[in-house]
Amino acid sequence: PGNFWTSALWNANILGGLNYLFSPVRFKAYASTGQSINTGASPATTISLDTEIVDSDSGHSTTTNTSRYTAQTAGLYLAGGSVCFATSATGARACQIFKNGGAIEGAANQAAGNSANGGSSFTVTLVQLAVGDYIELAVWQTSGGTLATQSGTSVVSTLWAVRVSS
Image (cartoon, rainbow, N blue to C red; front, top):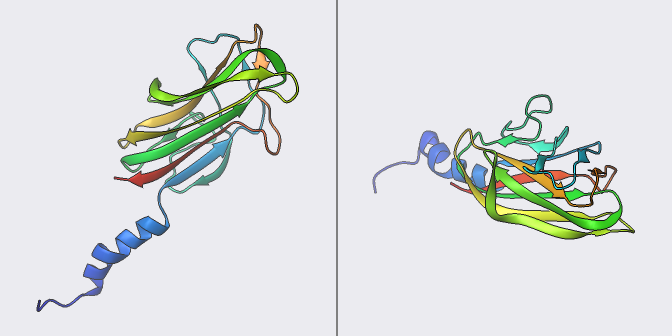
């Protein structure tokens, strides 16, 4: 009582919160070309992402460490990724979100190979990131030989993240 709402108070207390709600940190990038993945690759192979759809916080580079999205704002992120492999009915295909080069427990998905349309795998997880932490999409396959990821208009390998809270 007795205080007036100045523009500074409005901007700090109301507008900042509204801007966050309507425009959270968001990122999505994909690989425009296929990438060869060795069978049984251990550790998993990270996917190079050369094309950005959105990068509101400038956490990704298409020239340096292209597989990484590096958090510029700390918080809890909803992150996901997908990969589509070339046609092969042998073995399994998998993808997982990695944080700072290591696997996140419960962030992997595995699917069987497919002789008609290739094998696809996708994953979604929550991950807490500090400023400087990074995530990557890591993949592996067990076809018995090298298998390429597909590229095209709808079957690209993709990594995305949205900050959902602090």
